[in-house]
Image 1 (cartoon, rainbow, N blue to C red):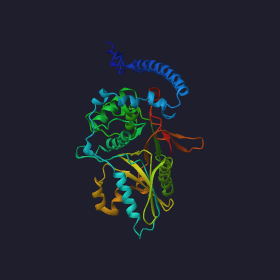
Image 2: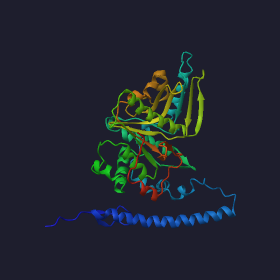
Image 3: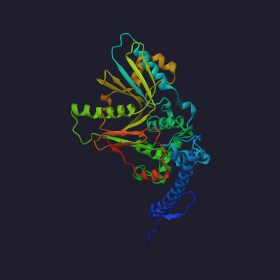
Image 4: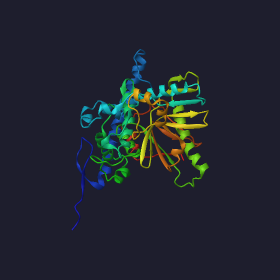
Length: 390
């Protein structure tokens, strides 16, 4: 007796046909091919119309050339206008989001640097101050760090705008994030990751990491890339351990230096300089935990360095008053030094935007405004392709 063939409903809203499970990939690819063809036709017509507009009326306000096509065809901005899509999601509680903590941290760094006994010269590079500090709560302690760091990236995307429009309309709750990850899997994004978590994450306390956050962001139409650091196959003596940590710190420092300064402040005695840049925060993952990198602290021209992180599992202050009450010692709660990083053999860093490696083996970061994916680009990013930094 032959086994009954399993079927799956086509995930395309305009179809919903029941398709044999072993044919679902070919079936959905056919829909996407049809959609790409329609999009290409539309793009040609729009560009033709735009060229006429540019000739006829030089006073018409145009979007920057780098973002014109992105704005017209991007998934993210289409989703922002889809009220039905967001109505399905449970959103994050407002009282779990702590704004302006990066600005308060800047003030604390400058205040500490004004101490006359302070001899070190420190240059600090921070991400955009739009990011919220978000901590685990009683109900997700022990497993919620990945979701909280994902929410921190989304808080940046919600508050950052391109031509007045946010990249992401809302920040979902943990339940909402789980729903979006499952939807990403159903769309064929990171099938291997879906299989590892048995294709189910909603209403569970399963941990998520960089690959699940990648799947969610690509599903929302946001460009991102994972940078891999792996010393598992290397015999790590003291010098190799330092090289591994320095490689990671170098990439983070390069990333912030590739941005544009929004503001620069120097402490009273000139020992501390804080640059707030336009760069997005970075999601950093190792086995068992994740954090959000919000900056890097360079001491005495690189003699020492610390990452500055929002760690959702740490006892971080929730207000400026609480931060001020702890004084200079509060900075240790935000610092992550190379010795701590060297204790883990593998790291994944998830960056918003694109990351490439040139012919000389140098990692390159694109501008953060190049975040919007078209449907074709999303299709090409379904399988995770990371960049190996070490």
